[in-house]
Length: 398
Image 1 (cartoon, rainbow, N blue to C red):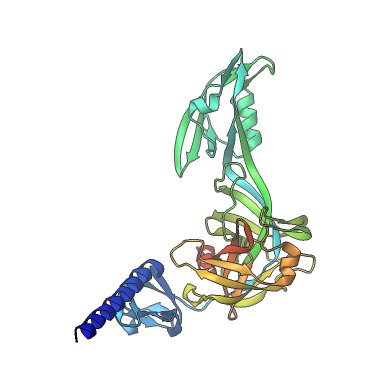
Image 2 (tube, rainbow, N blue to C red):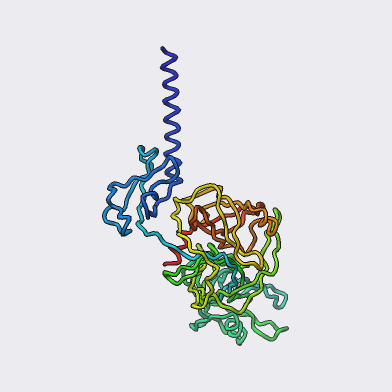
């Protein structure tokens, strides 16, 4: 009898441990908000489900909230795990691209990409650093006058007879003003401030989708950052242009490859937002959408591990479909929502996996757009991170 009681206690403790572990895991893994378009959207996996306090709070036909917007995740439909916010939405469709494109970007202000030591009379000085200016600062005005280009900054700083400058910069979202005193360099017969600046950049990427409802174009799934500072480049204006893939440098475990493209004269659209979740703008009225296919945008909880497909351009044949696999899903990371593995042998033979220029590559699963590739995983080019398409759609509409 004692053995039976001891066994029952052990089994009870084991069950409680498993349940407790699942509750803790669910509280960490389940999202804080849930996009609900259909009754099926209430299910996440096989062991966690969503139960609204009032089922009538979601009107699936009109996609309008008519009551509470709170719900609970329940383990096996019984044990409460965590509360979540219900976001009522309607089924939305976009035109999925996979087309490579060129990026021309001009910054809103001038980025400081370096501060330079200056040798004067046997001494080393650095006027910019001594003033408090740092790499990554965005110069927005000098002596009260707004500046927009590197040429402007260089002209103002070089046209000097020794007076101090009031340099207004934007740093971490806040504005600061520094007093900079240039130094005279006799060999150049000029005053120097000791800084390098940049006002533009160019690159290539992949268009994820066009949204006819808003007239917007969404691409990359990650921000454009300055190559020297790593800071997100603030857009003054930008342009998306047509490209032609000329060659591919394959990725390997030691080096990430890249698409090599020629910029063409045709404009796809303007770029006016550079965010953590991608670059966004408006496509032109004459943009060729004939190669795009219409797909419904999946909600995050519809994404599942397993077979998927990607659409990307890696040669002169334009966007093509290749096989892949979703190996991991995360609801808690803002941008690294999935890990995707390339499985298509033809694509692997051509690119070695994921290469630079494939950022924004749309991912299709079960006939829906679920996300876009954003980054390759270092030392394993067959794998990369991806962002949910729902996140990019919300960013585009905002």
